[in-house]
Length: 294
Image (cartoon, rainbow, N blue to C red):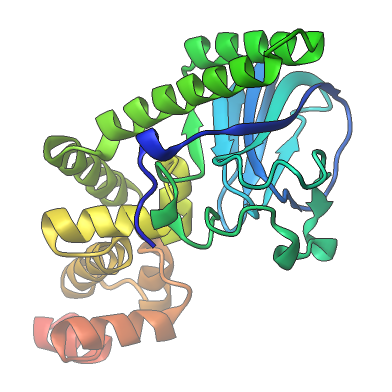
């Protein structure tokens, strides 16, 4: 499906909410519509599927597509305050039930997603990659607050005004997204940042999903940026850096192969062996014997 352009977006505001978060779900949640969350007071951790939790503070904004699993978590039992806007990118489904509460992932029914043309399963159908996490988004946080106030007043033409304000918020998010990775120069800068991060952290327990989450992008989109810029995916570059360091340790130290696997971020010696053989055509033992370190 082709990407949705800003000029085609005529958003429908479904509902809003403001919460003093004092509970723990202990399970991911998913919504049947698109969501914008802003952190207004305090701090929290945001957990996304298959990714490390990200620390958020007041002034942050999060954009999630329909069906995208998430969970906000308290830090040290301290409550925090957030606001939520649920919406569609189109007016096509405004006759459906306006409010559809999110569900815990174990009871979520994907076939009930309201707008099936714009979902997390098809990143290219979205105006920008989601989840989009903005740590410094004071302007968006302020506009979301004004939007919620307008919605709750229910004065004449409030739906049209809310739709316009919502489109303004989406446009701001799109501008930030394009600045980070939309232009050729921005994409190259983003890809270089990803590679630099891998260069520093290849020994950690990270994978494509973890890295994409840390940068606030969908792993499919970020790998596409990497491939288009440097001809390699996140996964391939990560394995390459781990393999290069493993070869260095095999040829210059007497460390046990299991220890080298651990230090280089491989799950175990078997995974190290498979990666090294694909990378060089030789086993770790053969490389070590050739270096005289056996």
